[in-house]
Image (cartoon, rainbow, N blue to C red; front, side):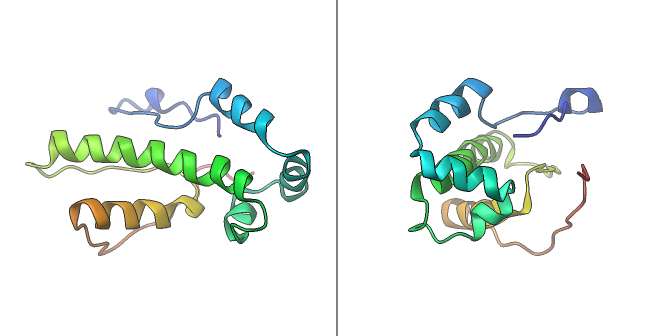
Length: 123
């Protein structure tokens, strides 16, 4: 989770990410060795490259649960705004893009025609 403040951009914004409490609850339920593995990786992208069989609970918490929150928000936007042209910026890490593309394609038949990756925060 990142400390961006999207409401300061003077454009409509939603934040479909986990709350700190939701993440803490999931984190506390992880096996100790998966918490240690994440602390060693320190990078969601490294977690995304892991085979689900290596640390399935960690992958589920860091990627899958957060991807579903994002997809639910995008599905809601589609239902409410699909009759007009709109532009949407998704400020999530690159590891989440496959879930976005696959989820929108599976549910609504979207086809990715182009994309632009931008560095929003450089750590």
